[in-house]
Length: 178
Image 1 (cartoon, rainbow, N blue to C red):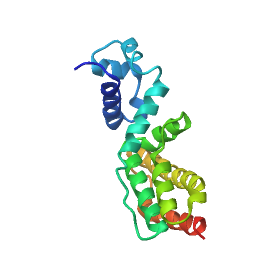
Image 2: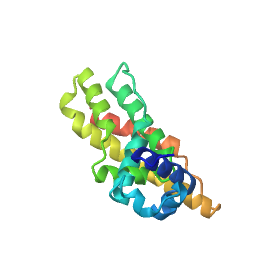
Image 3: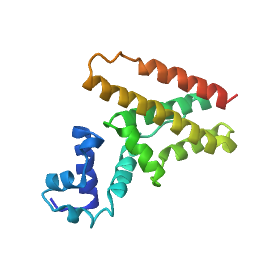
Image 4: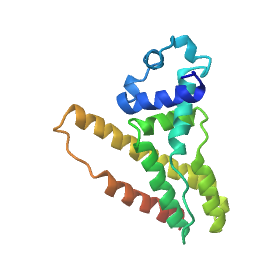
């Protein structure tokens, strides 16, 4: 297999799925790809750039979110799709937060803008994008951290994150669309 940026990102994502962020290093990734670590830097200038590309790949798994009958319905679907994408990868919320901070493209902005335009809320798109992204990443980070703690210590009390997510999302939407 020829080493390309796509193959590097693919392998990094596979490594993250197996070992999480603590197990992700450029040296480990290079070993997996059968190359010296320096070969990776022809395709990504730094580990941060690699994680930004991985974050964009994770965000791309959101898939299309169709139009709904209401702004709340569409924004709910966007939030749910974002949560599924970031929780689908171990430490995905942290990786996406790091990537967004480093300039990764956030597809949430585009779909929120389209939903707001359809429902006459165009002026609220930027604020809704920020609120929705921050809420989903924050709760997903807590969820993934709790999972990691529970793996390390099975006595960790369970938390019902699905119910918390739904309740928080409804509160956010009620306040944002009031």
